Image (tube, rainbow, N blue to C red; front, top):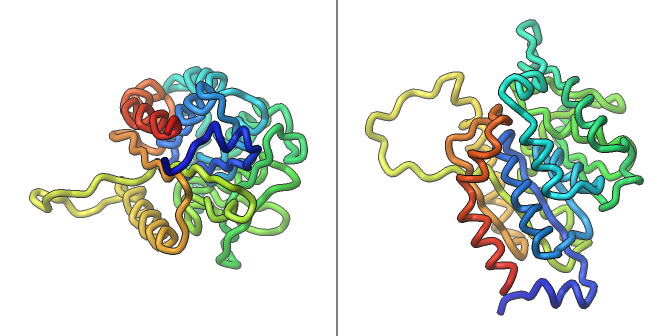
Length: 270
């Protein structure tokens, strides 16, 4: 067998969990967490970017997968829309992001990395310095807000006199930030699109395809990284027909990825 999770736990080996970005597709992370909870597997450290950082921060605060699912299921279309404070006058992004900060502060129970139940690393992109920034101390809410700043969608976030955008720009599934700290790493990628089988009837890209352009960049960045280092488990999940703003479609996400989660649990049992 390639690995044995119960054996690793008994031997007190350090298990790392990495949650990639993906907007509302990142709701799939909740069901990965539920699977881990059901199997009694608790990661020793979590790393995440964008939506993965948000979900990871909630789990690190002590919430269970079920509790995070309950939070997500409370979002109807109107409440999900209310979380996204759109501004037509904002030239740097469609969404300000202030409502996300308030929501996260309310549900985390703490704003300090040091008070989290599970150590957390949040990856963002330092815009002007063109490099990765890994937050693991200070204000976790501010760090997550930096990490979710999807270019063109969320307004870039200014924190500690620097401008930050989505961590997925430089490190979509940041498992490499844990490679020197863990004996075993589980990485979850929710952005991988299915390949097109034909170019027949293909249309020219338009504004609605902004996230598909982002996906191209995301996949190429991740493919290059996988050539140099592989996590022990690399779980690819694609909640089809879910857009980055579909935070109210929790049940649909659960339905789309049911088989993926089943296979994941079987893999963990090996």
